Amino acid sequence: MNNPTLAFDDAGLNKTSIEDVPLNRFHQLMTIRAGGGWILDGYILSIIGVAIVQFSDVLKLNSFWQGMVAASAMLGTFCSGFLGGWLTDKLGRRRLFFVGPILFIAGSLGTYWVESGTALLILRFLVGVGVGLEYPVAGSLLTEFLPQKHRGPRLAGLTIMWFIGAALSYMVGNAILAQGGDDAWRTVLASSAVLGVLLFLVRLGTPESPRWLISKGRFDEADRVIKQVYGPAFSLANMPRQECERKIGLGDLLHSGYGKRMLFVIVFWTAAVVPMFAVYSFAPVVLDALKLKGDWAAYGSVMITLLFVVGCVVATRLIDSMGRRPLVIHSFLWSSLALLGLGLFSSGSELPVLLMFGAYALFIGGAQVLELVYPNELFPTEVRAFAVGIGSSMTRVGSAAGTWLVPISLHNYGIGTTMYAAAAVSAIGLLASVLLAPETRGMSLEQAASLKR
Image (cartoon, rainbow, N blue to C red; front, top):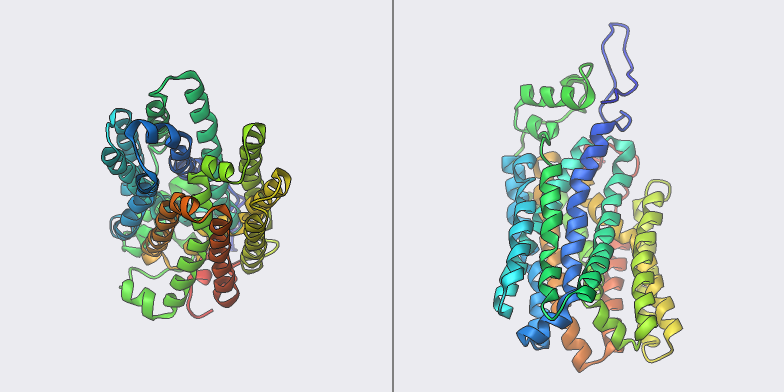
């Protein structure tokens, strides 16, 4: 493990804060361990769109049941976010770090043998529970190990991994469908179990967060982890000043200064994910409704997926230079206009539709990457996972509703009205960002989470 450049005082004591150390091999491995969860999340939540036409025919699902099956994973994340965040703060980050992969494996394998829409809904709900755990567990664990200079870009980079997983699901899923028969959709849905096994294995050996250990008064254990991660020259003395566990519960998040932050996190996060999840879950259906068929649909799917990734990469590079607040405001402004354009050009030729769709995919990147940055920076260690869990859970209510309503809206009201509704949701995110978005650029976790700043 590479030791960071150390600074010593006249007494020979190391005075380098862990907030200021350069990245070492442990940080790189920790990014992979946490980021693998986002790759799998993107894969699992997007793979449903690849197989939905096939399993809907076999299982004889109408538009209502298509929406229910697609939304069931979102409902699973809603349930697990609350409980998972609370358990993560109570029991520790490391203990729950392996629960998600286990649920991914079990739920994915089970889909291979389903014979009804109800069974598929239950199994998709199960993998959604695993997805919901990743946000408070993996996000908090990575946040509490990363130094301040690299925290924003690294957390933002997790969103890129989500889109990599989503793109991988389309490539793998379509390849399986091309080679398989009528039941190939079963292999498509079960394929995420392979990634679940890999994720479980790579997470073996992960230590507990020293910040969480300190918040519980477990100083000797925290000191051992610090020396393991940063080297023998480091100790508790190199940790930023942190209080032991304070009793901050749901009431504090809603009624103290954290209530305003919680409101912002819920509204902006929901407004960012509702249109995106709806589009990704029903990408083939949406593109067909926009009259993109044949090569236009094939190339359009690839282009839009790539632009989602490009938008997140660009936003990740801007997160520190531009700042969190300007980035989220501009992201919602231009993506709202792009969705509005999709509604206006929904009956037009293929090129304007692709341009508007591509613009949305590119500009929403700013809000997408901040979904993991803001919640983890705005709350103290003792309630960080709880707050992130609440935020992720509440966003999934809107995501599940939006995903469920997409096929119904397309069938009853058409693609134009559906895109106008998506634009309205994005505009709500813009308003919330203008009124409530704080700036946390250049701050330590303690400074960013402080109510006194």
